Image (cartoon, rainbow, N blue to C red; front, side, top):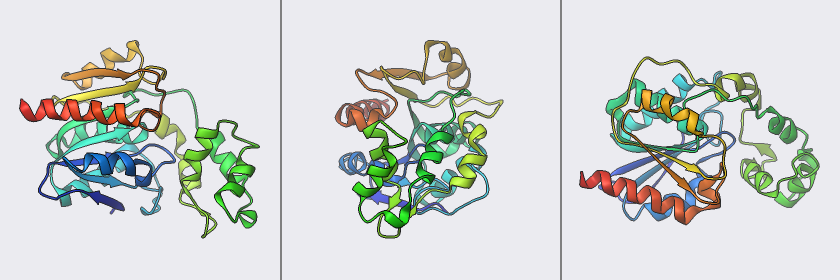
Amino acid sequence: MLNYVTYGETSAPTLLIAHGLFGSARNWAVIAKRLSDQFHVVAVDMRNHGQSPREGSQSYFDMAEDLAKVLSRVGPAHVLGHSMGGKAAMVLALTQPERLNTLIVADIAPVGYGHTQTHLIDAMRQINLTQVNTRRDADRQLSAFVQEEGVRAFLLQSLGVKARAWRLNFDVLEADMPLIIGFPEIEAEFDGATLFLSGAASDYVLPEHRDTIRGLFPSARFAKLSKAGHWLHAEKPREFEAAVRVFLDQKAGD
């Protein structure tokens, strides 16, 4: 069973949040807490991330089944997934649609991508953890391999400084990177309410993806956050939160 953190009253409608590659539930704590005034928010650590079990595969069918097991405990939910978590949420919707009330996919499409993220695994592996006493120590080392300060800050949220250990299963994530950047072939449709929310400055959801998206999610709506990239929820948290609320409020009123 995945590790998960909950916010808000259990009597409220449930919103499950699935993070992206190298992330964790803690990356979503601020947004989860704010949305908990209206929802029972369940933020999970995906397999091989955070405090969740270390497993031998990172396939989307396995990740979707992990989410289904959580939903078997908390009941049907609105499901929000970002990047890798968005793909897992899409597979869940396509294979077990009864588990979802609505679907929100943050900055990812149901397509294969050509860019690998193994260079970030290589960079994190280069950190000499015996010389890390503070997060600043780790950032100083990581800066030799990752120039973007925001990316370093994101990655370092998965480092347990006191334990001097990464909360990521590098071996499996590296071995299954082709599965992570891909998307499985599924002969199904999810006709429930679906929002594809992307960053206007991101190239993950392109106009040429829309036919593929609509073929799987015929009720899909599309929205963009201006001046936001792939990590739109971190770059524009208030605007992201507002877009989620508007969509879910509209669905509640239908």
